[in-house]
Structures are given as C-alpha cells and as structure tokens.
Image: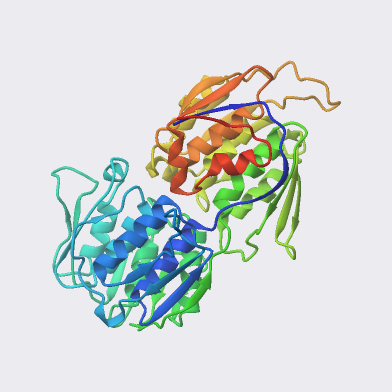
Amino acid sequence: MDVISQKSSLSGKITVPASKSHTIRALLLASLAEGTSHIKNPLASADCLSTAGAMPLLGAQIDLNLSTEGEPGTEWIVHGAGSRFHTPTDVVNVGNSGSLLYFLSPLCATLDGASVFTGDESIRRRPILHLVDSLNQISDEKSFVTRPDSNGCPVVIRGKIHSGTVFTEGAVSSQYISGLMMAALRVDGGLKIELSNPKETPYLTMTKSWLDRLGVESSISDDFKKIEVKEKKEIAAFDATIPSDWEGVAFPLIAALISRESRVEIQNIDSSGTQGDEAIVEIMKMLGAKIEWNRQNETILVQSSRLSTKNLPNETLKVALSPFPDAVCALAVAACFVEGTVILEDAAVCRKKETDRLHALFEELSKVGAQIEEGEDFLKIRGHSPILEDGSPNPDFNLHGAILESRLDHRLAMSFACLGLALPKNERVIVTNAECCAVSFPHFFETMNTIGAGFVLDK
C-alpha cells in the first residue's frame, strides 16, 4: 500500500496507541507468572500479536478477546505457564519483532533443550551474535547461529544458563540486556551484567520498573554499567493497564508543529517517566515549539510553530540519541523545517534497527531537497523554516515532493507521511509500502485523518 501526503492543516483531538515496549514486557512476564493476569489497554500491533502468538508455544494461554470481526479486544487475559513454562514446542517465528527476539531468547536459555528462533527478512538481517556470546558466557551448552559466517537468525538457543556475570558492550541494543534481566528471575542465584558502553538506558529502567512491580529485587548503577538481579523469583499473576506510547506520540506531535495553522491535543499521555522518548517535548521546545503538557489531565497541546536554532549556542542543536534512538526518524524530518543546524549524534545504534535508519534517512530526505550529511554515528541537517520571523514566506525554503521508500520500516513510513503535510501547495510525498506502520501504530493513517491529515491510501 502506498500513501499520498500533501499540504494539510491539523485540528482536533487524537489518542495514540498504547506502548509497544510495555505491552510486550507485560505479555512475557504474565506468561511466566503463576495464575491469570489481565492486561488492559494493550497495543494490538503486529509485534505484540507476534508475542501473543509465541507464548503458547511455551505453555501460556492468551485470550485476546477477539470481536466478531476478529479485532483484538481492549483487555487481554493471560493464563501464565508458571511452573509449567517449557521449551517451545515449535520454531519461534518472531515476525518483525526485535523486542520479542531479544527478550524471549534469553528466557528460553533458562530451559533444558534447544529453542530455534527466526523471523522475517528484516529480522534475519539484525545482529544476534552479541546475545549469543552473552548467553554462552553463562551456559555449558553453546547457542549458535545456523548459517556460517552469519550474524543473524535463524539461531539455536541452548540452556540452561546458570548464575554468574555477563560481560558485554550494550551498544548494539538494550533489548537483549532487558531479556537477560527478565531471564535472571528464573536463575538460581540471579545474574550480574556488566556493560562497557550502555545505550538506550531508559528501556533498562523500564524493565527494572516491571521487576520492581513484581517483587523481583534488582539494581542498576547510576552509570548503567552494572546491573544485578539478585535471586530466582517465582512471580504471581497481576493486572496492568498499559500506558500510551511516546514513540507514537512523536508523529502527530511533529506533524502539528511543522504543518501550517495546526492545533492538536494529544490525549492519554504517559507521564510516568518510564519512556525515554518523552525527551522530544523539551527538544522541540528548545527550538521554539508551542507545546503545553498538562500532566494532571494527561494531555499535550501542540500548535504550528516556527522552529529555529537562533537562541542556541552556535545556532546549532545537538541531540544525543542513544537513550531514545527510535526518535531519530521523527526528529530528522522535523529538522528539515528548522531554521538552523540540527545534529542528531551518538546514533550508531540506529543503523541496526528494522533498516539502517541513518543511511535511509540520508538517502530519502535528500530526495525532497534536504541539506543532510551522514556520518558514522550522526546526521547533520541544515534546515529552513517555511516562514521568516515576520510570518512571510522564506525564499530559502525549497523542499519539494518525491517518492519516498519506507524500506518496510514503520517509523520511516510515518515520519515521511508527516513530512508531506508541511510541503508547499501542489507538492506531495508518496510513501511506498506504508502498511508496515501496523508494526507499532495500527490504523495510523486513518487515525491521523480524523484530525485532517488527508492521507490518501492507494491500495
């Protein structure tokens, strides 16, 4: 499916989906638990449904409360495997979910026997040897990839891992570290993890918050280089309500800022501080964005804004992305409409997502006329606001339409669609293979159209 995006003004109220990161953690931990858990407001995205489909292979039962039309309900019921948690009865196909791959494979390493993981083409390109090496440090039976000279799935995970210390870098992803933390609650004596270069650290804090909630004793040092889960813990069933997804909030937020004469209220905002992507609010405010966050009412009001680096040192905004790398797509698009220079740095991990996002953004944004430079771990974008300070048209603004490839990456697809909303009249963006948005934001285009985006879906 291709999507056509062109100049539009946005107005109204919108609610983004629930957090994918929280939903997957909740499903995994409820599947480990003894008893029946109730998960309210889950995200019914492709990645979360892949998780719900995988856990019955290990002994859990998951009721999605499907409607007569086959749509998942707003409360999922998980009958945990508890003491019956067992080696998967079939190959685990994680689909497009890196979270499921990196979370569940360490858990399977706590079981006797072997577990085989694979996924779609994108997953089979994502690195796995860093996880394999971590598991092999604490296991007598060695895990391995099935293809010679490969760093991707299929992978065979063998158990059982035992108590000890894992030494690993942590820069490729935080997901396998979270996987090890969850696996540790099934290991006699727990686990220690020492990281030489921790990245995506808010997600480690999120995992610890789940362990805390379930009574699992754990600690993370201030520099995130030392993590410990103290001891084996049998967990009981629980009820949880999943908060909204800050990674999803980013798209209507930037769309409202860069499009003209827009005013959007985003509702059901998570103010718990467990999602690193909320940093986008303060980042955009540094550029002059009109954003009001009402934490009591859990809403954010966003209005069209002239964005500029004028009041920043050297008229340059530098953003270190390692704590929240999934924001790179939204921030790169927003930067094209900023009067001044934006440098998105410390972003090497973005090359190891669904696609090499740094290179993809460089190539695709160049097609619309963006002045963008790609470095090993950064993007440098010299943008222009569509308007001058007096509100008149900016003669230096020259972005134009193009056909942009989503590369089957949901965050690229949503970001490029938002870009089209702020182009001059009679210019348009066509985003290819845009159905990939279902990975994290089901019905994204339909939802955005309720506030005036005017996206045209060419199926």
